Length: 192
Ligand code: AMP
Image 1 (cartoon, rainbow, N blue to C red):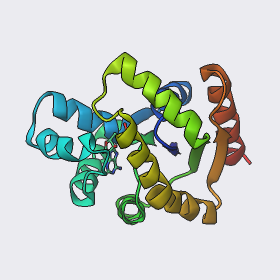
Image 2 (cartoon, rainbow, N blue to C red):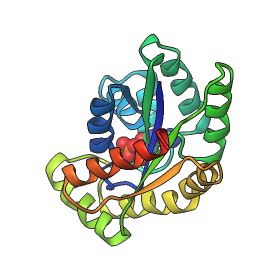
Image 3 (cartoon, protein in one colour):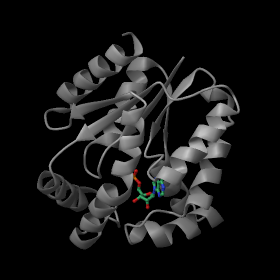
């Protein structure tokens, strides 16, 4: 049973690595960004609400995001573990996730943090904007999302570091290199 969180600034390859790592470890990947984007595409009430924030590079409010995660974590496919991608991003979300897991006598096992330099991230995201046309990938929005990461999500990282379950992974390299680093780092925490 493995419960993992992958965390990293926008453009760090978090989504790609989440999919690769979850396949390798045979656990389901849950990406809050993907769930939001699916809802935006099909114009559900959740999607309409989330889009306002996503387009501006803001966080979707905790009450909306927390409920969505609670619902997702109540599905049966997470019973054997999961890899969370993109949640929690605020310390209030950490507390909420703690409560959900504590209700089941569970907790996170490992937090993988992908690291990369801000200017490298901006360059990558501007490249991705050209390829995918994601509406939250223009430079002003990208810089705002990076600021939010530093202002809010680094405090999340610090909380997990205090708990001794954080491992940092250099996010610069080929996709394969970063996946190997992550798997190795994860194993050394899971099987100390
Ligand atoms: P991501 O694909 O993880 O970069 O997420 C894309 C966007 O979805 C973010 O910029 C936020 O607007 C929203 N989002 C995803 N996860 C969260 C979260 N845990 N809390 C608030 N907003 C989120």
